[in-house]
Image (cartoon, rainbow, N blue to C red; front, side, top):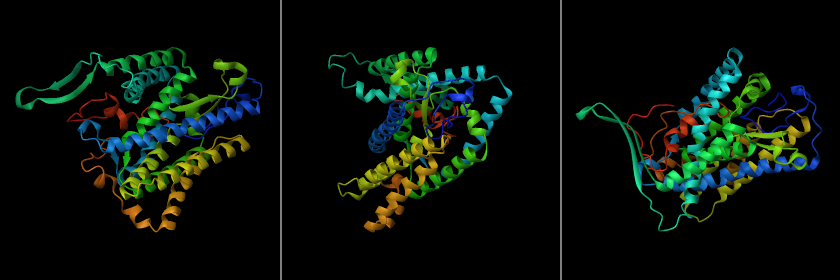
Length: 394
């Protein structure tokens, strides 16, 4: 990665060229169009399916299936924590060797990516298992203390089907660890994005506006105001972005001139879009007006990001374009339909999620080693994992 790229949290950009001291042939218009179109499609898939799965997750009766809810207080703290994490990463890469830091990050995301991918493919894989498959149940239990003072630290319940999914995901993990191939990177990135949209829930629209508004300022400041994001992006090697080669038509699967899109630009708007889908369902009108409106707004905002980035050849803060679109379009629809009061009074946690736990370990920043990890750690550990009594941040 080089300084011509946007950082892993921001929009897509072109890689290569004189910025890293190498000479590459210019990308063809066909290759550029293919790369940007593919990034757009890959961004839409986890948002669409993650939003649908968030509804099922919200209606889950088991404690292990309950999502984490972001409150207005969490949303207000997010940009501050994100900024501190980003600055900490910047100092880390300035002080310590990038080689050893990225080795640790690779191992970290190797484990987390396997769990995320396994959780993602499990519902699809269940359809392929025959009825005669010996689906034995297992449990992994760690406790501390004894007698009345015994406390559960880890309590996992899983079955043979889960082990098969973990095995398949481990193959992708080894591939990523050994080759860092862009396809393996994207499989992990898509899994992280879908799980983030599914398992992170905003409690109401006001909280969503606070979160997106704060990250709007955060994104613009760190991209245009300093070189911190670009420096971290150049140094950071982890599947926290989606990439697609612009020279795929010339070099095939070994192409190396990438356009990229950070997972934060998928998950952050995605959880807001998923909230609007649950709001649509709460209206009981058998329509998904706000979901489709916000989904179309996301397409417009990301398309505008790619267009501006391509014209000016400079990394763009994607949330600069996505936030006004994803908030503005649904609000305009609500104004036209006279449902603004209903939209802003809707409480996801009260109507659909009566027992949703509050988010006690707030995720830090997309595009950092802690990106999505803290928020999904308890969920990704297993499809049937019980929530520990004393959860702790990873």
